[in-house]
Length: 344
Ligand SMILES: Cc1ncc(C[n+]2csc(CCOP(=O)(O)OP(=O)(O)O)c2C)c(N)n1
Ligand SMILES: [Mg+2]
Image (cartoon, rainbow, N blue to C red; front, side, top):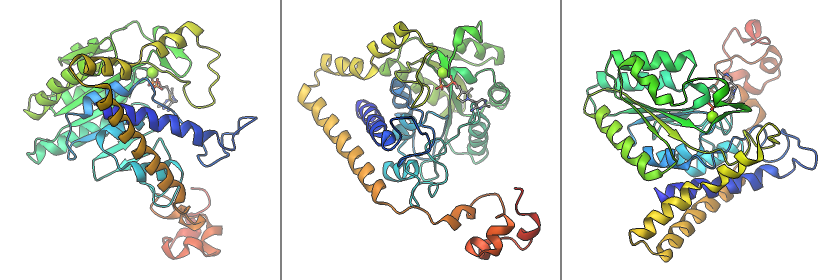
C-alpha cells in the first residue's frame, strides 16, 4: 500500500512540473505538453491503495475525474497511462481520452469526467460476473459531490435488489469544485445512504490507509462470496485545487492548511515504522516508486503524437464531409459520411 501511495503522490508531483511547461506566465490551459484540465488526487491516496489491494486484474474498477491514484493502485500500465495523459499515439486510448478518460481492458479499469458516471457500468460489470458464475467483483469510486446523482442512487438500488458483487467507494474530500459539502447535503455521513437500500454502509473518518484496507477487505469478501454490495465512504483531503490552475479563492486558508497537515502517506509510514519497518526499507520503496515514475514519464515524452487524420478512428462519429473528401480518414469513413458528416 505504501508503495502504491508514494508512487501516486510522486507521479502527480511530476505531472505538475510537466503540466506547467508552456502554460505560464498567464495560465493558458491549452498550451504545453499536457493540454486541458488536470485534476490531481494528492490527499486521496489511502482510498485507492486501501481498496485496490484486494482486487485482481479480472475485477472491474470505475473511477471519476480524479483517477490517477486509483488507476495506479489497480495496476493500470503506467507508461501507457502517461502517454495517454500526454496525448500520445501509444497512450491507453491512443491519446484521445486524456487524463480523465483512461481505459485499460487488461486490468478492467475505466474512468470518466462525468461525475457518478462509473456507477452504472460497475453494476453492469458486477452483473456480468454474476451471470458468468465467476467470483469477480466491481468497485465504483466517486466523490462526495456526486452522491445525489441519480446514476449513483439507481445503481445502489439495482445492486441491492440483484445482490450484485459491487462496492461503492465515496471519496469525501469536503468539496465539489468550490461547493462545500455542508451546503449541498444535510447527510454528513454519506454511508448512511446505504440504509435506504438495506445495504451495509461504512464510513471511515480519516484517511487511514489501514482502516480503508480493513473495511474494503470485508466489503470485497462479501461481494466475492455472493453476499451483495457495500457502500464505503472515506474521508480524504484535497491537498490541491480542484484542478491545476484553480486559485481556490473560495477556500478558507485554514482548510487548505488542515488538508496539508493530514498526510495519509506519512501516517502509514509511521505505522510501518512502529511495526518494525526501517527507514532504509521505506527509502528503498520510495526510490523504486520514483524510478518507475521517471521511467514512465520519459517513455511517454518520447512517444509519437497521433496523426491528425486518426482523430476519426475508433470514435463513434463520422468525419465531417470536408475531412472525408480531403483524404485523411476517408478510407475508414462509412459510405454515408458525406451525407451525415459535418454536424456530428
Ligand atoms: C454530471 C456532471 N455534472 C457536473 C459536472 C462538473 N463537475 C466536474 S467535477 C465536479 C465536482 C465533483 O466533486 P466530487 O464528486 O466531490 O469530486 P472531487 O472533485 O471533490 O474529487 C463537478 C460538479 C460533471 N463533470 N458531471
Ligand atoms: Mg469532493
